[in-house]
Length: 230
Image 1 (cartoon, rainbow, N blue to C red):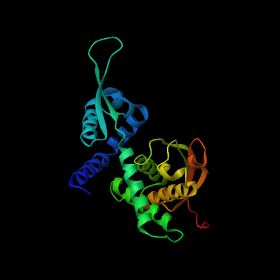
Image 2: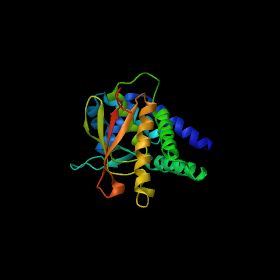
Image 3: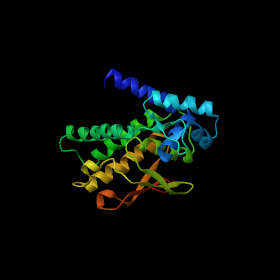
Image 4: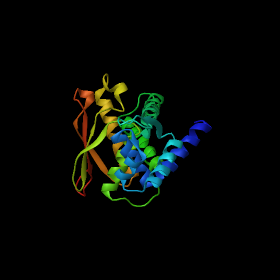
């Protein structure tokens, strides 16, 4: 890892450490290019506060600035847009997992799953601010933010008190999904379980649908382990 990469990771970590900035970034990813006032109204802060947070996101490379023409004429409006940094992060993460598998010649059963879990734990520790205990709803929010670094289409499809169903229109393991769908799905589930473990939750993932098996999207239920489950 180069000095530039370390510096960029630190800038990203600082930018996401503030909950309001993380919320603003989530809004930009969902809503697309937005002006300062539109962002401020959406997240419930003063426009000057929103502008300050947006400038931090731009400095960290998490957002970019462009201009939008007004339909009624006049000066173009300055707008902010989330940058697709998850694409690069996802490539690095998947490459790291696959490289580790290659280095482990003839891996024993369970090796791939363990490596993917460890990768998920590293990702969660990198983005999570602080070590405070999180409620399950908060863990789910941070799970989504972590997965946004490896896939661009994750959303909550349904949820309960101790479970959440996630839908992903992308696949972080699509590079191997076509030829090895069973491996891709196993790695994806292990990645999610590793992220949740680092966030303080003991969970297991149930696959509902999978892009690797020809479905239009991946759907997984992430469920807290009860005392009676194994």
